[in-house]
Length: 370
Image (cartoon, rainbow, N blue to C red; front, side, top):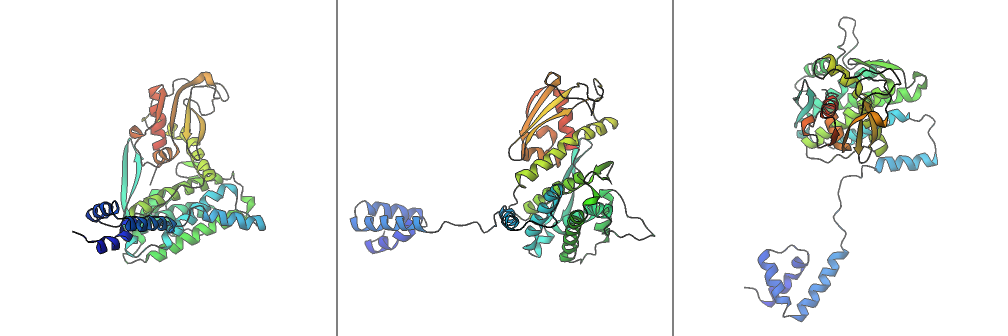
């Protein structure tokens, strides 16, 4: 089928593995009997190895942190970002970078927001633009507590809703059908910058100052971590919708986010008990006294080892009082806490009291919300 001249001309494509199966077979059969072509094929294969490998056009997710580290080594900032606000600063910057290159039609890409509620997984359908509006609305709680303008308005005639769900719905309804995505993005970007600047330039606010948030009162440091966690989760929702990679936070930031979720497990478990969704405590203990605990081992970057009180929030953890052990991957634990993985489907290593294990897994999923 092929003469010598044709086979010789196919050597380049063969060396690049770009020839068809039939051409490949013909070339390789020819090389076994033609010393000149075999020598040329060897040179071409060696040359291919010298070609620059195909690079990923996406920037290294750690590039920003490396550039900042280099700058800070030369000149320390006069006003540093507090350590507990750094994850929020980093995650909003990463999401902003993802959104900057968004095409017009990608802003209308459908996004399914998921969370866990009343023993089942639920969700809401929106778009990429709608997700940013959701972050703008809920971050507005943080902005309002810091004395910054509320994106829903601060008019005296009608008070803005306090619940994140109600705030999101209100902002979605207020957006005009032809609202430009750049308007929502600009408002969210300015608000995220403003809250970071405010806590950086006003250290007197204090990391332990409590803010009302949903049914809780969270310290300012935990409110920032909660918003960083949601920003990362929804950035992943957007990246999935537009088929674009979005990596994990820095290990030190991810550890802070996991630690917050673990610390909120006790309150989540108590809330489920008040709602009749969890079994009552088996044995109450005084603050500082030994009580039943579950050992939670989160593996991977950002993970760690925690002991979760099962009956009394202030009970002390001792090895003799451990009744169960759960081990699962860091990313899977975060997906569970975000409501993206049903508790029954969590691929966890489990040992001990099955009821305690079930209650903690369901309490973790119940941390999720719109």
